[in-house]
Length: 140
Image 1: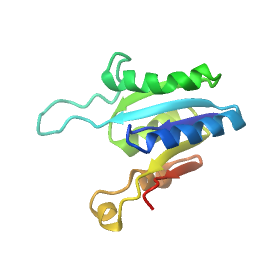
Image 2: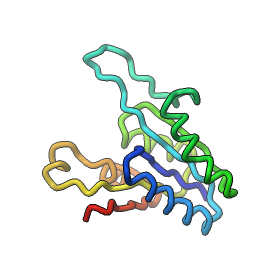
Image 3: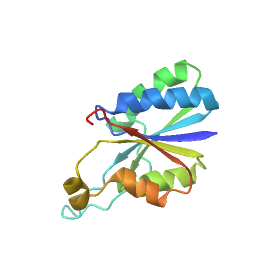
Image 4: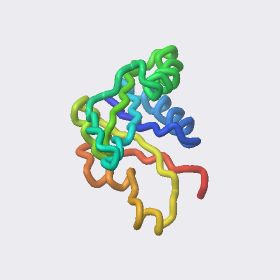
């Protein structure tokens, strides 16, 4: 079993990691922790690097720090920091790594936010080829 867990370093990340740890233990799953870095603005005219970022990148170092307790507790864990649009990166990494389940958080923004900005969780649910677990925020 392979579990892809999308982390955005928000206050919801701890809750997502706790739920992922429980699930990984029960399913004896390998955990892929994914953080997505948005591509550079087209205004700056820097081409987007859609490959995984190097392990010495600051976001990679943060993710490695989060992964360490999972590894120490015996859960097989890999870290991925990708630079792309969030939904695209999550879907691409889930396919590339052959994951069986995707887990991510929902920040509980209102309808107007979703209308204007959109929702990563909604986009992932629509495009995923495997089950998706949404961890709700506590703001409800």
